[in-house]
Image (cartoon, rainbow, N blue to C red; front, side, top):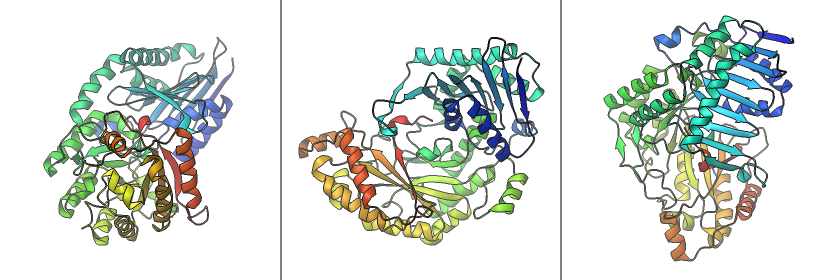
Length: 474
């Protein structure tokens, strides 16, 4: 019986490298599963979490009597169970199912107990990926299968497991499909719908300082049509934080950052906004900015459970009164990056989309943000305006992006227009006689914009990625 036990008390960075090596042995698809559901430890200052701070992390790989290759990876923030290169189940530290890799498909589970399945399609790249939401019956079946697999692991290993592995499996054993469904009800009481996050924030701890969008008139956006805008009082927000902490339990350690929602929470008057940032800092440890090298490691060692900053959406019209000093005060309290729905640099297209800002407003906002030490994420709407607006959309968007002075701390996202039937945009487009772009034409539009970017050398240029609203679940 082949039996390899990888066990380490080294820092998380060393363990992560060890895990990569183990995954290589079971194939590239298992590596993909680990990358999708991997996360750094975040923050929780609760008694239950502190009791588990001395959890020893380890990886166990063993060939079983039936010829399967099993890997059990226990980390501070998650447990991953893999079999051969065909399936992997990821659970958070509390025992919740987070994701599944099964027969070439990735499944991502939301906290309101929906599951999105994704797989490669005929077209190459992210834009060609196939996706759908499972039915409630399929969700129950997959969850039941995942927990049954986790419970049979102990019997399949030929040698007794060390305490850290048994402990992790015991936490998973406290869950089943029925408990996940009960938590769906709790989640929907705790949150108004979490409509969207930027892809790099999918594993953020979401805190709703505000609900909805204070503007809510962009023709292409239906994400917040179901709710009135509401800004929580400080007392409401503090209670919300405590309720969120209680809901997540140990599972909060999977969350790497904090995202302040909903659509434009940063539009609040500065004094009220500072109060809310202070409430977040009173509840959680936020890594100070500008730490590097030995100082960063020393701080992380002293605060093993922490978050890597606060993030939020922002717009260029409701925040015009915010100064460099205002943003600097927020940066001192943990604000690290904000995300701007640029959509386009073409003033005519912006007007058609119902965006009340001008391109120069975005330039001024980004200038203030970067002067205060806050990075930006820019979101460009591919396909907006159809063929009729395409030339100006490509030209003016590239010109605007080039004027923003973006660097390696910033992000550029290309987001494909998702025109849902019955949307305001669809009606406007019909009245204007617009011709929608095909998937291939959208790809060509994105390529032409990128060709027009002048972003400097690769080392200092912002990262560019794809942003698909249809792939978001929280």
